[in-house]
Length: 588
Image (cartoon, rainbow, N blue to C red; front, side, top):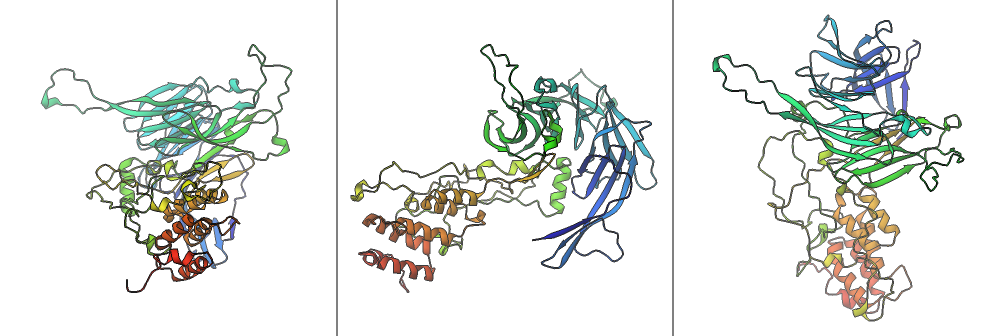
């Protein structure tokens, strides 16, 4: 689908854009320039623009002749004059900006000041409050609910906006010093994100950690007069719940699921060392850093998956030493969020408060129970999906659900690993003439194995599944879209390896997630492989019997496929004799 995007720009003198950020609604955009100009816009999307309306961005879909227009409505413009402020370095908009009457914006400056700008309704005065004054520039700031966090050269600070008090200060990690990575990396960039309302994810240098915000119970100070009771002030503290050392310099970090995080990092080129562990000064350092996207286990700190991105670089950028600030990692699991109460209210207003509890078969489980005499057809015909015997799934009693972040609803286990070849029993031997000694190189008999799907709803947990994350990698020269492997990738992998039985098995387990593969084609490939129609190998009686038993379950009431494969059986010696017991007969 082709799209034409027209963007109108102003004639003002151009300045570098320092930071842009959306609020939790995704319709309020805050932008900050290096000259101190800040603007907050409200974006509204319409399918057809009103007549006489000045549009800022227009996207046209040519094949349907419909126009989707993004309108910029209103807008709050602020200026942090260079006469009274240093150069701005970062900003954070209140995630609940659209819902609150009092609008707020956080801006960090190069002189170490963190300024909170508030403005009420129409004709209200602007109020600037200095929350922090340090000695070095504010490098990053994040905001969620009542908590904000920022980082400078001294370390990390967490602040409570409700009581306007600082919660804690955490010293900068030992591995977050740029001089450790000279000359290949010249500067570092901390990454801060509240992955939950009380959990802060931090990536800085070669360190990744999680800080949990906890409430400290008030201490009893003896008897108090009930008539002169004072309000209880809630005290909070933080504790480190995870800390690992990376084998790279973190440029971006986002949550992936409850047990994994995704890290975008620069891996420095290895240097030759002599026997004493000293670097050889005669080695010419002219190699460039390697950009990697790593999946890190929260519990073990190990890399479970890693992809090196060999992005081409312009000649002028191929110099020794680069900044980690030139790279960033964005994710649909790392969006601006309000506090949990507001997020739950928004879900209820948008009709998203219902639990989505689809049944997800465990890896290695059989999607059908055809043990014994149960030989009902799978899906009542290929691709129908109505008769999968997966066992009952009892939903709990309806109750008000608390808000849960997106990465807690999804698991990396929902993505089938292409490297895991289940049912592969290939021992390197060809098929023998004696059926008793035959060993298949593929899992052809999975249809007749007992199901391993748990049907006890008291012990089997209910899986809440959301869509996989959409991630974007930004570099000085490129923008890369990242997606997770899905069921189609797993099926494609085993098909390329000639494992058509395993391909059909995975497709049946995850048929609702298939987008590029059809079950009809996979069934044809399975039966073709079982009957050795794609090779010159002589088919054995055991294989003919296996294919005949599988046909009622795979073909169901698909008449055209029955006709085709009955014709194929007629070409085999004794094929129709074996198939006669499994042919569907009308009225029986």
